[in-house]
Image 1 (spheres, rainbow, N blue to C red):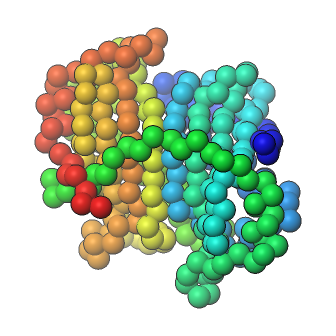
Image 2: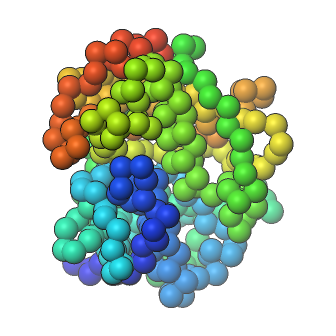
Length: 290
């Protein structure tokens, strides 16, 4: 079996969130750092300059990443390799413990032509030589925000752009999180919101997050919009869907699905507060037809 490539990614103090752990969105940043290092060190480094776009992410969070002077290890494997697309699998490991598993689907893209391009035999052969069968992550179901979704304005910052001049794929994790926090705050103003978990004696733990990228998002002065809706609320968890959109043109740039567990300060699952549950029911998601 093809061995995993192991890449060290240093932590930064600013990677921590209000709960004192590395923020779930930053984990996607670690994946990107490892992926870029992997490509730059090989014969396909030029693909980063020509255009390598992320089509989708699946991230499963298994344990919190704590701040430490030692870097985390990202174990990276290539999975399926197609004509223009390839899959990369990751494990984020700290002190011997697997803290996250993830998959990224990437596409080789010709920006001048505005479409994906086929890899050359040498390019594809390089990936195939490093590929191995991957165990798929479980599907999260098909949902859409629907007409009753919560709506939050989204301002793109200049620093959100990447080397290709578009909003970097990792930033979408931040956009979805911002809208999610605003929604939960409006759903329950008594203190059971995600932004005040410690104050309320609770933690909100993202255990899974998938994002599909549908169109490139550009910088502009006018705000975009993030729409969020509730697909399901269980006893101790909830599943949310989100869309990053242009409210004027109706363009959907990305869709996300997030599973969150409500926990106590020791990370043990506890029931979702009734006030929050009732408030979130205001914004139901709908089952997608496809």
